[in-house]
Image: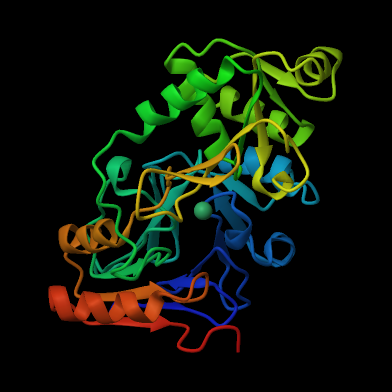
Length: 336
Ligand SMILES: [Zn+2]
């Protein structure tokens, strides 16, 4: 039997015979949630109703409950796995392996009775992600085009710390980013001894508390809706205010502003407004990192995830051309 892997029109990454990752699929008894970002929670409610088991790490379970809000994961079908822990289902063995992305993120390895190994990276940044040896690899394709390469060598974390420190002299610094990334920035600032209060709205606060429960050290967290948070922001006092990217148009319009995003390839830091800068802090591998993962993983075949981004086709073509490994993008047509 040859190792099986595909990505369906609805975004389910099917591995072997029993597993569907990151979207619901009616043919699979097991659902894996690789991490808490919304594009990996497709059809979660249906999976909770229909699947025998819904597998994820404990950190992912806790983050999904806070970020998603509307699904309760206390349901009996949810089974929490640690990194490196394996469960058996029929002839298959399923293991979650750490992925360096948002807290709790996992890669998925499925091994069948014949020893075939099928792996799915989920979203990842190569630095802290162990590369899985496998026969068939399903690869994320966020930065799957050769133009998405970050060639700058400057230390982004140092740059971020010095930017924040400098701007704090004039009052609050607003940081905008996505869940997970915001907490990464808090951790960077905290470990660099930036000791002003970190102010944030309720949901960011709750996500941060989950991160602390799972071992991240984030500093002095202060809700923006409380008395202290209000006084800091209204009084223009030195603090760092963390808001989701969606609030960018409505919050801190007159303050110093920093957006953290991976969608920047020209320079590590770029001015995008009067008092606003974009800092290129990414939690995904760039194009070179994606190719490097494939090179180290040595699969016989690669499937690129063409559901979540539009660069799956380009990435598959470049893997075939540059590494000589057969690669296809799936689903072939997006959103059909
Ligand atoms: Zn993600």
